[in-house]
Length: 419
Image (cartoon, rainbow, N blue to C red; front, top):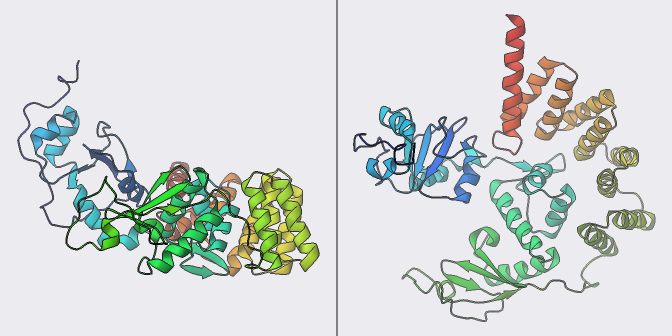
């Protein structure tokens, strides 16, 4: 059967759309969503954390269609959708909303899709080490919106900024150069609270062009015409209608007068880590502690690096030392639990993680790890309790899908055993 035979040909010409201009009432959790006639990665990036699964419009389990315009009619959809989907659409089994309406929904319900993310969650989303996120935070490239038991949490906007930074780093730009130029940009355009999110970023070799509403911005004020975006409206400012270049050097010499000796050590260690020289970074941190004394945060950093090079026993001792220096450091307790589990000391791992909860009862990462360990140890009721708590605390986080899947599996398993 060819594609033409697979299309609906006799469906009514009406489609049950939400009325134009009306913000749709949506429950995205557990929905299977498909975009018809367009592809928007940024919109999908909101759908997935909100609990929806994005699929092709040809998948039979789809129950929500997003169209490019609420004016899309059935004839247009009939050319793009299989017969089965079209029949379910006409019967009302599939909800249809326009892209602009969905954006309105997210605007009005943003708190529901922008939960808080720990450093490890942000790192997992971006595929980078936790230490990288810590380095960006230290430079002020991303800023936590809250701190609980010394554990920083980032909102959805900061995660988007982190994604922009990761892209720039992949293109060969160093975090120090990004920090320097963003500082200049902020002083020239103080109204921009989050320039990495508010400005579109274009990369040309080692230069970065920052665009907002058709203009390119340079902290120094030098201007060029942006021939690709000449259209402006009466509401745009001069800097939005003209182009400027913001150069980002591949590397810049350190200004030794800007930082303390401790910051110099940390800067060097982070540079070595970024270059993949983990053992050398460890030695710099050790030298730092020899010079200035033991520090819980540095012990945590060393432990993470040791874990990454596979020296779990040494990492364990560093995490223990971090806790001895600061018993309230829940991040070190969580890291200790993970490394103990890695070397097979499951009871001690559970104890370490439970100790973290004593200081931070709503530490979602720890509930996730405890759920895994309890499930592996066949303590299913305890595992369910931690899976449920994790989903409550982080309904839109990067591990939410796995948590819900495991929770459903365990409940079905226990239900079958009861029967």
